[in-house]
Amino acid sequence: KAGVTQTPRYLIKTRGQQVTLSCSPISGHRSVSWYQQTPGQGLQFLFEYFSETQRNKGNFPGRFSGRQFSNSRSEMNVSTLELGDSALYLCASSFSSASGYTDTQYFGPGTRLTVL
Amino acid sequence: GNSVTQMEGPVTLSEEAFLTINCTYTATGYPSLFWYVQYPGEGLQLLLKATKADDKGSNKGFEATYRKETTSFHLEKGSVQVSDSAVYFCALSDSWAAGNKLTFGGGTRVLVKP
Image (spheres, rainbow over the protein chains, first blue to last red):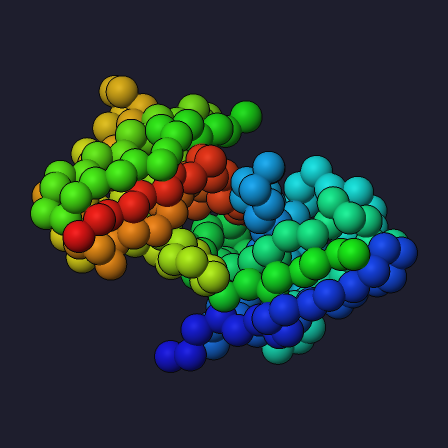
């Protein structure tokens, strides 16, 4: 089974721009979560999508948004980029049910975003 | 809320030495516990997991036991190799909470010297 894929792997943007990152989950996984990893803050949860709906959200400003498509692929968008948004953005997919059970999360290789 | 505390690194060892990375947690309910490993320039790989008290997760020579009484999930390996050099993250999640998320510790960098 193919793993979680993320594109692009590397991005360089300037302050004020916006960026869209993409994540394709493992086949059959309907839950996709996004995390931000920085040296200072570590790994922080951004949001989770299940069946095209945002099911959980972390403590990030509204500039961070996401969506999920009917094939479970997900995108996250960051608008009005700031220097502090430079980070590794990780996507994880898992099997999950509508009733609430969520299995182990499997991570992609990440997208390294640099904001200049 | 949930939290995970793990020992700070870096931990520097010689090949074939014994490795222990301490991890303690605070959680409501009955979380599942995980160890993930991150090699340079890569994402997180699941190393092992345990879903209930007294469960032992094991993989690639690594082991960790879910200790509810001490709220701990320490990672151990009896004989490390240079290829074990990486950053190790302890994490927890509530598998039965809709909108599940992982809560991570700060990570422990391990460097194994030949």
